[in-house]
Length: 282
Length: 271
Image (cartoon, rainbow over all chains, first blue to last red; front, side):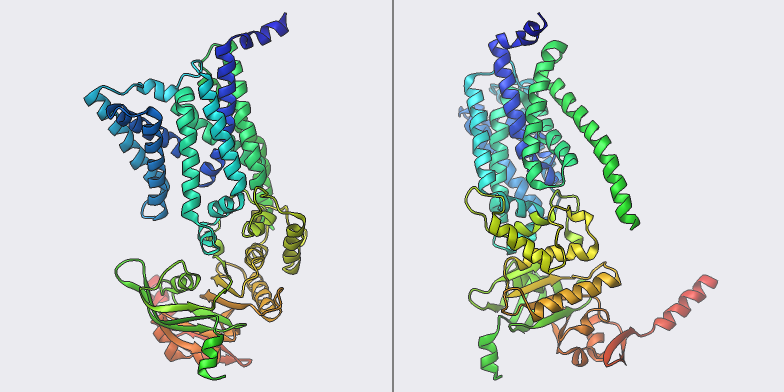
């Protein structure tokens, strides 16, 4: 009887689709999040998802396709953030703050003035993980496969450009091209996931798996597979628990991820601080 | 060697070169030539444009006037200041050395031949067995050698280092200088690596190099330490009077006016 109860949510298609999308989105955000976190751009997920809203509002006003408007706008914002922060006149965090909030404000203004935006702010912020179509799953899976291929194919260049951009540049790596590749992948990730999981969950899934993986390994290669695995676990397990806890799935996913991060931080952090104290002592 | 032969053999020649990041030039009318196998130190105060000169040599800053000519096919490798490294970045010694190698399509991990190449370079620099260690877990000298290894695995003709001994203790400074001297004399590829570095350390490092360039926005003096470490050139370079003594056949640079400054500080604290 207990086994039947545990499997009960799987008898509903909307739950199965929600579970698949939460797991896939967790893995995808976990993968891209490695670069986001290591580049000190943890706020970019939050910012770009807001920027996407501005593009969506503009697309609605101009009667263009949502994905075309939001995607183009997200990508343009991401490239602009990369360009502004590379010039080092202002930091990446400030560039994200200025560009994405301006974009979000423009979306609000357009919506207020023309009232044509097809998606409400609530929908953008929280998404609708239980209203998932097969096309959503295919879109997330497609961006996931593309991201894996691109990251494996450009692994060393992406690592070099992220760790040491100045030396990478003089060693023949096109750092602006690597930044553009990452921004394209990040924008595509946000574009295909924002409708179903919302801005808040995207931001959390871009950061939590990556920082947890960082606590568990000192190797970039290991972090790159550990983070998507953790992201998939946070998404899937959080979604499943939310069914029984009767709490919105996004909140449970974030809380589950936060709990694992705190545990990793407490256990590994103490050990590492002890090791560091030893190194400094010598 | 005749002047024309010297020019044809040069790895790199800067002629009347000026560079800027905005309106005003940061370095002006620079003439420097680097030949194969040379070991050159560039000394000068903070803000004198030493790093800009290195960047121009590396090609990341373009001259606004004059020219910089590199030997066709010249392989350059750069070792940045350790202060610019993010020590919390999750990267092992092996990953740092391997990241500068070109990657085979869809094969990011080092293959067997590459692994042995990485281990050979690390072994040569006294870092054998540390491939899996995180970079933060190493001593200052070991950390500097990891970044040297990353440069060397590119098999460079010319190695450029920005302040390789900044912020390190005396033992590490000796270690780094000895490793660089070994590389300059008998490099792994057997062709003679030219080394160009910047340093603030006149007595601990610069005085030991065969050639020094005193630099402050332009070349003030260029020659052996005995020729260049002269009060006249040093005052023009640093904008402060300096005294040069000889100790064991080596020049030792002292700041002039140190006693007077100390006396004034003592008087002011006493009052």
